[in-house]
Length: 152
Image 1: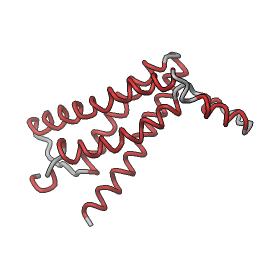
Image 2: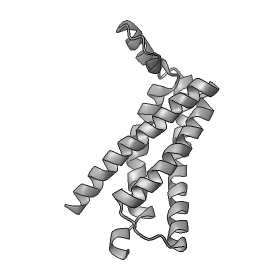
Image 3: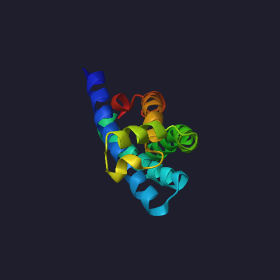
Image 4: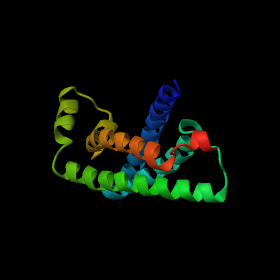
């Protein structure tokens, strides 16, 4: 039952983290007009949000000792750094290679006028997000917050 709750909470906060990442991506891309910088800045916002929610509500790590915080934050950032590099490299590459174009064509064919569906790199970001979410859970569960419920 504990595992189901943990997975459910991870999914809920993962969706919220995704909204933070995608929402800030759209804002940054529309304002600075750079897929790379928008993706990097949105990743930083999402990682900060994810650490707080994962610590408090997903893996329930209750320790606020400096030693514990430094270990959690450093391993969290390192593990998210691995998946972040994957995302930061793959999203612009996929966008450059035209991954988004069929989705833009579908939106155009469906006569969708909303600017958001034509955001450069958005569909590439969605595709990469699936892989990133799975890897992030595995890293958090096995490395960052390993046995935190039992030891705290």
